[in-house]
Image (cartoon, rainbow, N blue to C red; front, side, top):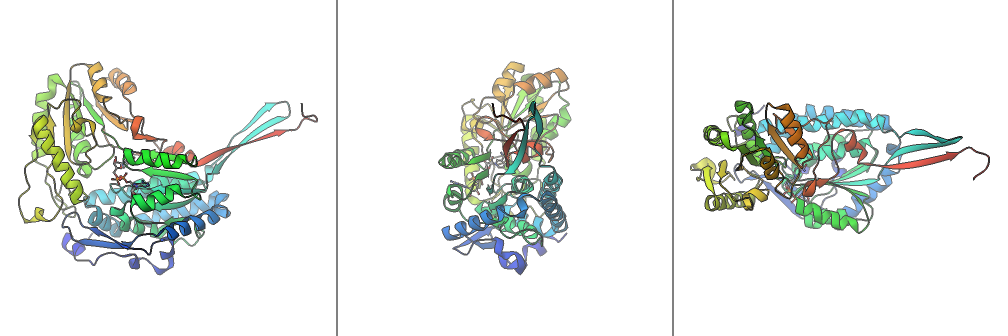
Length: 495
Ligand code: NAD
């Protein structure tokens, strides 16, 4: 691994850094788009955005490719995906450094993200040869067969917070199922997405057009893709309000959608919990990735009998967190992604100060190192009314809102008290309680005595306004297929 200074001194990344052989998968020659380093505010990368003609071109070649050999050759798809997983692992230093420079996250997290992306691709490389239907006897000489067919052209639209794992979580099963994909990353993480897709585009066996990428704003390029008559399915990861708009637009042509949206997840700590483990879990749930995780445990829901002690010990841990540059190995909390995001988070903290008690955070970070980057010190707020925006809205930053309960029923009511339903954490040594409360909490994922653990094999997704459909696992592959039924009647007469 290179030192922070060496990495910072590198010239701004552009698509010209890609091997000449695969630059054609990026359909973008329009106005320039620049990424700034969240740690310093300096230019990191420059790409170009896609014009409407280039969106049409990407979808057009994808449609042709989707009709070809890729659709029916699971062994080919498996080989290509398997080599892609290996290529991501081999290129981890370069991709992770660009990810940290463009998005701001800690280099350790960026490396974990590249590994997570490779794991998703490798898992679905195995699944590519097992996209099967069923056969059944339906009566004397009557047989039914189902086929799982690819949907066609899938638009994969991704956010900036985990741009590579969230990309591969949709892209890999879509490709494994035999679809063609046009990817549209968030503007803030365009360069690292293109760099991470390049090894796949470069595979000698990948048919031309099966992978395309368009770049630009959501309102223009993202919307053009969702509206495009040549796109059959939208796999969207992003904010709930954007996801609702995407679903409305897709409804014009009844397109299939998979929506992975926002959250305001409760992390519920009972008095009988393993306290040290729960403290570590609460810190990691709220502040890892600087709180910019859809499943962040951004609401700590703690039992009253231990609340004061728990918050005192939590506060000591927060005091020990070092805010700094993502390239510095001693950093615990890296900058947030942009100046706009920083301003919004500081406004939420000010609101928390007015509406509740700011237990930690909110103080300005002094020193030259913090002057030009987008830093926020982690904050903990208690005593908020349940209708407070800090309880109800996704802040997407290092801000933990605390709620206190007296019994299981109140814990469940507080846990379910928002429009979101993405994930929840439960900390208890009582198995019966874990089962009962876990069943009552409205969320797609419940972590028990752990938090934010992801496995390619295990489905994730949201209920309520956190999403539609599931990703990862076998169900995550099935989302990218349509079932066709063939009904064979071998009887001599029809009726
Ligand atoms: P966002 O909704 O602003 O943008 C997401 C993507 O959609 C971007 O590529 C954007 O350019 C595009 N987009 C925006 N408007 C569009 C439109 N009208 N039509 C088509 N595309 C459009 O989200 P963000 O700020 O990039 O990411 C943060 C959000 O993502 C948070 O709400 C977070 O919770 C959510 N998220 C959810 C998951 C999950 O798995 N549920 C995972 C990560 C992030």
